[in-house]
Image 1 (tube, rainbow, N blue to C red):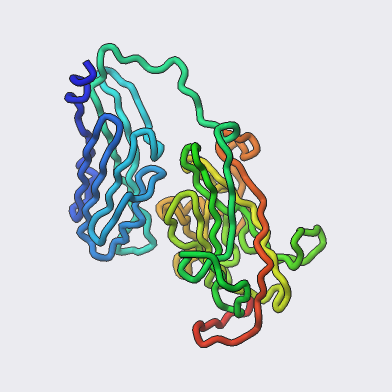
Image 2: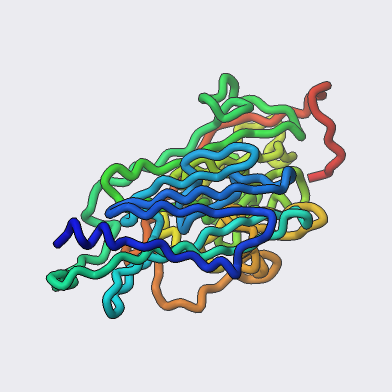
Length: 326
């Protein structure tokens, strides 16, 4: 019966939404799917494709390839009539007007065997009690390939920072920086001066007045930040205090996001430019309409961390050009 079940597997795709300059191929297997997107536009950045919560398994100048398990990437399962259906969205996000953002459906449908019944109990993932999450934040070298060799940075140069979470047995989570402030003390004091870097639930507020930016993600469990060295605490020991959050990739909203300001484009969502409206509140007050909260533990956990000390000097360098006054 099961052999007959898988032989009856069919692939559904909505060709009407297909763009004329691209082609998508699906290969649905019993427990996995391969999606190959072939792109005809030379200016398209195929690393920006996402299949649900998953990044491309591999990509080139013309193709983005996903080889994933149907239990991963937040596939939705629906049993209807004689079919068992798995659906997801292939999304592309870009700030380039020549390569506009779009979403394309990905659906695998299998003939439902007559002796198949849904599980009576399908446990809902909970972060607490499933394993131990280990958070980390550190200074990196210029290309983020290893730890920094120095903790001294010239004013206006870039401070590479990488935050990560070790997930082990957990369902894949998205690492976010909800808040970061610079201070001259290893512990934050209520009345001590500080410099806001990230605030308003994930907005890189420093990018409004500098060249600071989030780098493209390499892994969902990592977040890379290029922070332009600021005048605050010049010549003193500086500590960067952050709140790290590991969150359900499908639970993003205006309070769980990573946004940076891009000149001439405005606020952009790091993980999917097509949903940058989540960043619209970055210049006001980001509040969630949802009643759930991170303290509930059902969608993520958080950890406070301190990075430093590091020192910003008022030296000159021939390796960068900076005209700001922050």
